[in-house]
Length: 319
Image (cartoon, rainbow, N blue to C red; front, side, top):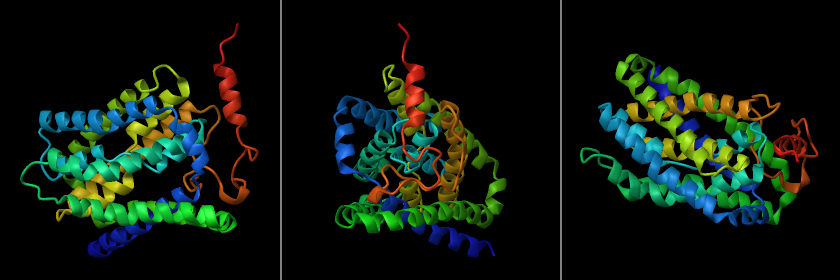
């Protein structure tokens, strides 16, 4: 029975990764992405925080607290993967500019595909054998390919993209939660390992530090600081799952799943606290810009921007 649940979690991993990346591609407006790319200094600070500071702090914590393999491998994999699709939901929950959140996510995801195969051999010890191409190939096939396909479809057939985007996003979300459930059931015997929970507590502590490191990248600008915090603390689940599945020891995959789950709920709560009146709704589709002029069917503000405008008015200093 445990083997069946493990197989189901493996299949759902592929479904989640491919559909979540397809959804990202279907909902990206290249014009808005280019606008937000002009703030390149902020993006550079985010890249430094995500690919130098966070992996460095995680490596220090792994050494200091003597986290054993394979749990140490999982923590280092998770720390080196940035650009989570969940950042779009976190951006919406915190009442910030979804387009800017999407730009941060895209830049970090592209950087993850380029840098993760290089970072991991340096972070992992010599006892772990992992080839650069073994990491890069599934990232390219399962992340970049559906992303590009979604963006092309949005460009050449926007109405079709608008019609399929919501089902794609919902199925992706359902696959994620199914993946979490079956992974926990499939690896239930391993959950009693005290070393696993020690590793999870260490990982959460480091990622909370990452939250404050990311907040500093905004240099006092509220929106950029909040997105920096959320985008640095939430790692790229898709990339981490793909990479951890390359390891023979299933505890690497399990640790990534459990750490992602704990941080996902914590950051959704933090994002909701940052927003004025947001409520957590786990099965809402994730999107930056709805294709085909389709309005968000679940939004309290279909015209868009009202909550953000209220937030900006509240932040505006009085003369």
